[in-house]
View 1 (tube, helix red, strand yellow):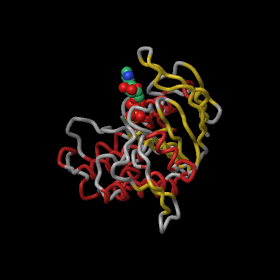
View 2: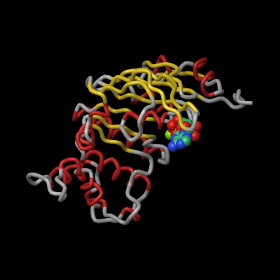
View 3: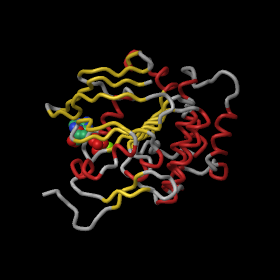
View 4: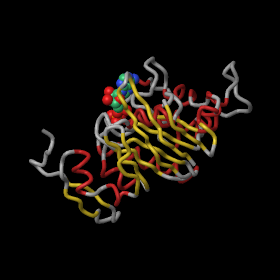
Length: 262
Ligand code: ADP
Ligand code: MG
C-alpha cells in the first residue's frame, strides 16, 4: 500500500504540488488524470523516488520511499516514462535484458540463469520475431512494447506509467492497456498510470485521482470522476456523459463549441 500524505513540491517558488493526499491499495489499477501542467508527471517522479518532495510523506508499506536503496526500489517499482528507451542503437533483446539490472552485481552478473525470464517476456509481448532488430527499426507501437518488456524484466510489484499510450493509434492503445492489465492480473501487480484519455482510464482503472493546478481535486471510482460538472470545472469544457454499452462504465462525449477557456 502506498500512502501519500500532504505532499508539496515547488520549482523556483512556484508550487507544483500542493498538499496532495491519497492512498493506493495493492492490486489497484490507479489512474492519475488532469489537464496539461496539473502536476501529474511530477507526482509520479516523487512516487518513484526520482525527485524529492519539499514536505509531506510517501509511505510504501509503511516505510518512507527515501529509506529504500536504489536497487531495493527498482525491485519493487518499475517506471515507464515517456520516451524511456535508450537513445543509442541497442537491439530489442538487449533493451529487455537491461531491465534485469536490479538483480545483477556490479559486474552485471546475475545468480543462476535468468535468460528464460527475458525469453518468456519477448514471447508474451510478441517480440520474438523482432528480438535482434535495433530500436531504430521499430514502429511506435513496437517500441512501446519493448519499453514495457524492459520494465517487466524488472519483475516489480508496482508499475508506474507516464502516458503509456499517448503517441499510439487506437489499436496499439488497447493492445498496450490489455498487455498491462493481463500482466497485472497474472502477477498481482499494482499499476499507477498517468493517462490523458478519460475514456480509456474509465474502462481500465478501478480508482483515479483527478488533479488541477497541483491540487488533488477528487479521488474515486470512474463514476465519481467522470461527472459533467466536475470535468467542466477542471478542463473548461462540458462533456456529455454516457454509459458504455458493454462495460457499463461512464464515457465522455465532447461537444463542438463547448469551450469555457477564455
Ligand atoms: P503534467 O504532467 O500534469 O502535464 P508536470 O508535472 O509535468 O505536469 O508539470 C507541472 C508544472 O511544473 C508545470 O507548470 C511545469 O512547467 C512545472 N515543472 C515541471 N518540472 C519542472 C522542472 N524540472 N523545473 C521547473 N518547472 C517544472
Ligand atoms: Mg506529464
